Image (cartoon, rainbow, N blue to C red; front, side, top):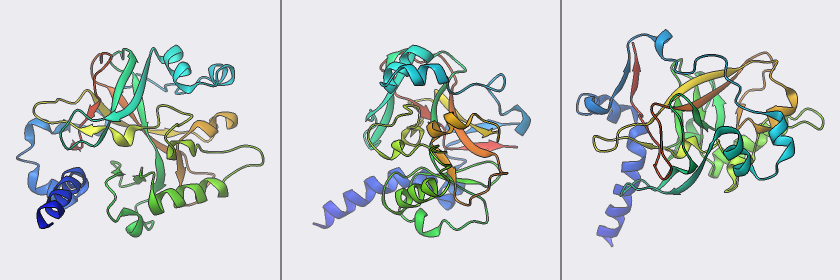
Length: 252
């Protein structure tokens, strides 16, 4: 019984430790080979310009989101059992191939400013992403995090228009990119093939396309740009490969 409990704790810890700040601080030196360092914040940008994430025509013409993704981007990604022993769920390229510098996935969730409460949502939650400026994105699709996201999404609805996508909370997201929270951390044996890029969606983003954005602000603020985080390919990625990011990124 004790052995079973210890094993269960070990599996949970290996999944959660990369989000635990004291553990990260103690292990930065040990993990130096897998640490992604950016010498200047202005250089932490792989996207060449203001990228168009969505195409309205394709979304109107097709119902099958994976078909749309394959047609518009040339590849499709899906959640599957990770190739890592303790990786749990991972994200794989299941069709086509990804070229270097392409947006591969998005990190969905509720967006919190540095001074907004997230204590209860963060308990046993390995999906809290910390941005460079201290903003947090809660990408957990279960428990209280799921309730908070749905509540905020219902609050910000504008007449017939949904201003965010709730389908990422299910097993079949309308926006197939919205699975970035399940991308596993790289290792010395499995190098990172994607990296995180912060991207603020301007207030003039087309209203009819906001229903595909898998993020929402915890506090309603129509004047604040919507923070999103996209995962961008660091190299060409072939069909069948699992996506790996680097949870340790230091911007000097």
